[in-house]
Image: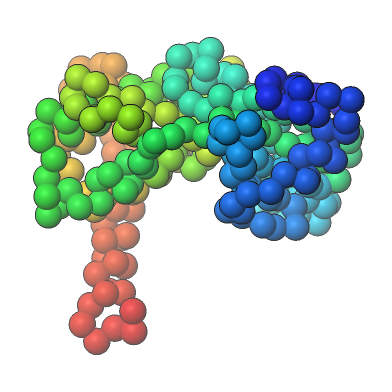
Length: 271
């Protein structure tokens, strides 16, 4: 069994079964599945997010493995990813409680509690009206470079996200975001993987997720080049030559997605 409790949960659950107590927490529920529960709760006047994982069962594990997917067995993946990103200097969540018990991965019980990041807005929400109301160029450039830098550091630290979309980058709004005053935090790491080195396949999947999630916010070719230069930390000519396979794949998939979108919302469609 693993159990790490920091305040206020160290005092709140002193002498109690933390695994039983975490199940009693109440608040706004964001996800309620048989094997996983996610909610926001308040403790001692402060907000926290709680993710509880219960055994997914061997059937689910085997189904994932037969489709070459890595199953999420518990909160341990997010706990390790938070620690790795924090050590690498990537702003992310602060974990204040973690528990894991059970050797059998099919019925393991685990949880993680993180401090709420507030006030914030996701980059998806922040940028959704950019095509109609473009931001100040300096602010846009700063955000692109910040996301590229954080993603590059994450990958060089051996972490791949597996849900790497702009909605999982939170922009802090306690002060007015400007080009010279930006704070971003990366969240939702329950599927993240931590290794010595990120395999190219998983690196490319993260980059594809970012690219596709930003397709419709009005980015220009120069914006994309700015991202690539910052992410790869190499001259653009070297990137275009060395990463030709990745860039070609992104453009092909983007074209297919755009065609599918236009067909779905064409006049006379059932959308």
